[in-house]
Amino acid sequence: MSEAVQTITGYHAICAAISSVGPQDAHATLYLHGQGSRGEQLERLARIHKVTVRRVDRREIDRIGGEKARGAVLVAALAGPSVRTLTDAIASIREQQAIVLVLDHLSDPHNLGAILRSADQFGVDFVVLPSRRAAGKTDAVLRSSAGAAAVVSTVEVPNIAAALEALKKADFWIYGADMTGEPVDQQQLSGRVALVLGSEGEGLSRLVRDRCDTVVRIPTGGTVDSLNVSVSAGILLYEASRQQQRFRDPS
Figure 1 (cartoon, rainbow, N blue to C red):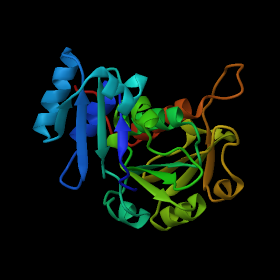
Figure 2 (figure 1 turned 60 degrees about the vertical axis):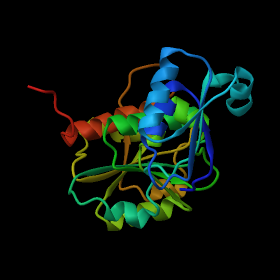
Figure 3 (figure 1 turned 45 degrees about the vertical axis):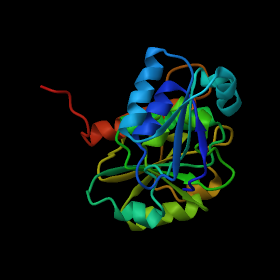
């Protein structure tokens, strides 16, 4: 994942991004306008993480972050939690149970943001993204993910099909999501699991589908053709985390 400078707006996205700032981050500056409680909370958080804070007028805020900035914008070159290579990401998993999410060329940043938010909530070990022809970690993704994009580990690969082969060699069972598949609640999602979701328009590409061990679907009873890809991701991740007993209600 590159460390290009990002312009981040939205309270929750800025909070998460500031919290992820570390010594490896080359630059991070929080620009603020106004004296609201959220602005004060952001400034306090920035001071804790040694992020530069600059008080500027509203015109400067709009120039840097656009109209959506609403009084605060973070400019940062964040290395974040991303893993440098797929080999490193796989090697970082020591447990016999794991959940990896693979996204096959999603184009909508809002879908990507929502999926990363679900990945954070359901304990995904890392997310595999294509390095080209797909949505990347933009400001829109950070906002849609409520900041989760700043904390979820991701790895970019040039070829999704080849990434699935590497996961198979590491004992991952590959589940592709498609409406023609078997009901996901009838599958055993224990062990090392990789869930693969296709693009919004075309779903799984042929090469990616051919490398899936099992194709699964979410049983539904509605009249609309299919669920949105971000909704599907959330349901599939919930089912996998439930079966792996990743989260238990306190007794």
